[in-house]
Length: 398
Image (cartoon, rainbow, N blue to C red):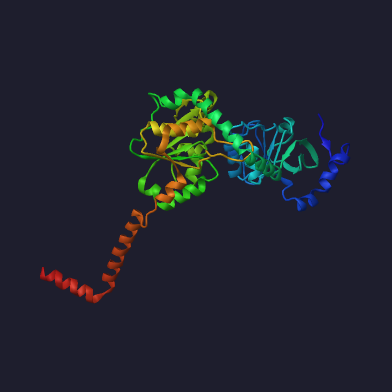
C-alpha cells in the first residue's frame, strides 16, 4: 500500500490542508497540532515512555478515563487513536476527558497508522487528518470541545431520566454483586488490618491534587497518620504530592516501576486478565503481590477492604462517584453506589475532612517553636557577660 503524497496524485485533497494550516490555526487555536510521535498499541506502556509535547499514537477502542488522565498528566500534546473510542455507559469516555482538558483527539484513523508512524516522526494533525511530513497517513473523527459542551448541555437536560436509569442499574448491580458487597472481597490470604485507624484512599480523580494538598496543609495526614491506600494511578499521584502509600490496590500495570518499589504491600485487584498482567509485571520487577479476582472497580474493592479491615474512618481523595452531565459518564458505576450503601457513614469525602479538621498549631510546628526559643536563650547567654557573671556566682554558692 502506497502513501498518498500532498501535491502529487492527491494534490487537490491534501495540499489545501497544508496551505491553510497557518490561517486555520489563527482562527481556531489548536486545530493544527504538530509534534514528535510516541507509538505503542499498549497505552500503559506508552504513558510510561511519553514525554511532554509528544503526540500519542495508540490503538485503544475502550480508552478509560484513568488512562486518559495518565496521558494528560504526562503532558501529551494530542492523541491519535487507530480505533473508534467507545465508552461503557457507566464511565467517563477517554475522549471526553481529553477533549475537556484541551487535548486534541482524532480517533478511527485505522490500524495502518501504527505501521506508518514511528517513534520520533514529526506528526501534524490538521482537523481530522494525520500527516507525517506532507504525507497523509490516516483520517478519522476529530473530537471538538465545543461539540462536547453541546452534548453536556443535552445531558443535563436529561438528568432526571439518567437518575431513573441509574437507580434501576444500581438494583441490578446489587443483585449481581450481592455476595461480594455483603460478604466482602477479602480472603484468608488477603486481609487489610486497619482496625481503629483512619484509611486514606487516593484515586486519580481530577480533584485529587488539590485535595491532597489541602489535607496535608490542614495537618490531618501528619497528625493522624492514616493508612494510605493508592488505587491504580493514585499511587503515583500520592507520591508526587509527598504522601507515601502503604498499600497499592488495583491494576498494578498502571503504576510506575519506581513507584511500585516504594510501596510495601501490593494487592492486584480486578478481573482475571488484570490480575494476571499485574502479577507478571510485579514478577518482572522481582517483587511480590497479593491477588483478589473480583468484578468490581479498583476503588470499590479498596473501600471494601478498608471497611472489612475495621477502619474507623475511610477518607476518599479524588472521588469521581457523582452524578455527572459529561457525555458517556452520566453516573457513578452502579456497584459504587451499592458499596457506599454497605459502608455507610464510615466513608467520607476528603473535602469534608479538610474543612472539619483544622488545627491552629501543628505538633511539628510547636516543636520547632520550642527549639527556636531554646536556641535564642543559648545565644543570649553566650553574648551577655552580666548574665554569665550571675550564673557563675550562683554556681559558686552551690
